[in-house]
Length: 409
Image (cartoon, rainbow, N blue to C red; front, side):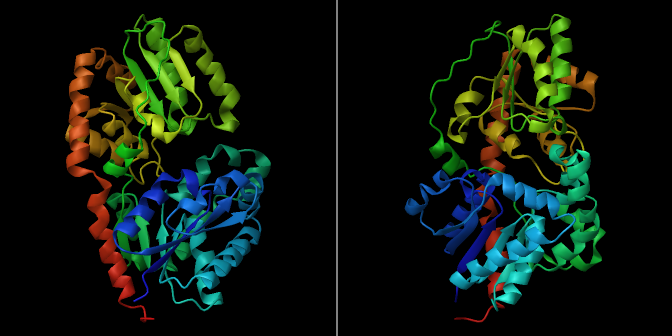
């Protein structure tokens, strides 16, 4: 039986934590892996030769790739290119299953399978609620890019891009339920729920655990950390407003922000950050290697996940939630449904609904003893119920079902 799986990532694989985690999962299950992804810079492929699977890279600048995605809203240029690249890949490798990541890859890759006569089954991995997510992208909010990208088209195209697959991977059961409720055609479709949980063993082995120092004006004040893209849709502007008001009320806390600022909002966010930075109670680290994350989490007492409540952010639990749990931190989160259910249901943090409830949640953790106790509870919960390896049997069951319909070679 052919047990070769082709994986197509519409990005540079190197920094895609979810996909790399799935590759390890496939290998544990005994499958042979082949990867297709992008090469934005020659340095992207410097470590490819030492990986235990081959990678074919599409040489394309990130700027051009993003531009093609934008104009694809009014043309089909990018879709045709995706089909061309996928077809070349499928002719190079005889794959039994083609696992592609993100909604817009499904139909071009289904077309590629037909075009080159492949017998591969198509699995679509939904990293997000794409039709909802694109409406919130800062880059799509200028008049020209908004018109070109035509985000509204995905509301009508979603069904056909889902239906051309043989299996769909979602981040949460609630996201699966929403799709099956919306589209009757998917009620008997194969689904696999693979949350953004950590492969604890691999993650722990990757951490450098180096000592990091940050100079705070109030060195003994509790530190609240946010890790991820810094943008309004991620709740950062609300967070900065909350921490400024707390400072002006005489409540001393530190705010550690780790991650790049959304380019379209950079000027506005930096202006908001300036007040707290000048007071010595805000530190922004624009980028860290994921191997250093634990070192930064150990500097913190409480973790923040203030995502704006919308259908995109309710499609699954953010990566950062499980990373925070690994760092033994209690979590203050907005009321996005999957995060709320996890945090409230297991008493590992607090939920806020608006500015005032956000402030009240922060006040609960001014005593470091309180945050340390709840943080230990979060780490224990992660280890007992949310190790990514516990999902191996779900994926294996789906693959075996698909392969049972694949002619043996």
